[in-house]
Image (cartoon, rainbow, N blue to C red; front, side, top):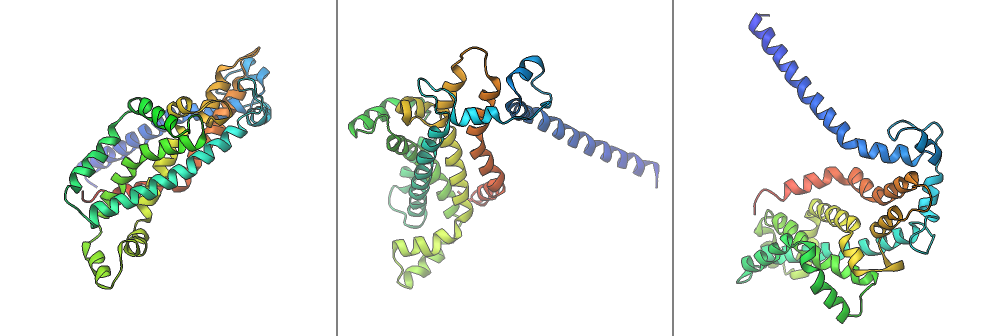
Length: 292
């Protein structure tokens, strides 16, 4: 092997080592908060105050998890996160399903049943993706008051469904536009109508973007705090509001292990969703990014 070839090989190996080393260092940096949360939640309070946050627990205990789940005080109620976890499930499941279904219908109409002004309507809906939460709080509060849904889980479902339609419409429109129009025309020739084409032709091909929409909406809705604290109160609050109340309520020594266990309980659903379906999220986004 010549000197130049050996030099090029060493440079290539050094470059790969530098890239992988940088990626590992960044991964450790970003995963450090998660590590601290896990190990702190498995320690007793005495060990936390006498040791460090980063080190492994001397004796693993799930007492903090049990207290965060069923005994931690939130205001005057000491029921833990369990009822608020259920509230979030009752909110996120219908909101994700509704916003995804409406976005699929919208994307189908905007690409396969185009009408005069379709691009203008899509532009208006796209504008909704850039509206900050703060801009819609007052109008939403007035609407929920008129519908007598203030402070309820169904009201929060309505809020997240309406706010998420812009995103789901964008996802499905950009995906459906990549499907040849000849498929819908052939189905029409065979006598298929609007909904038959949608359910028999479009939806079976849209599994990747359905996964994208569900993951996106689930993450946004589950992690939302502003809408939850603005439109619900007391026992109707989602888990993010309850978590904030647990962390900010201190009686005696600060219970860091309970706080970390509560944060982990609140974060587990989104972590599970990304671990199980994360690769499909990337595939779905790239599948809908060819045209549009």
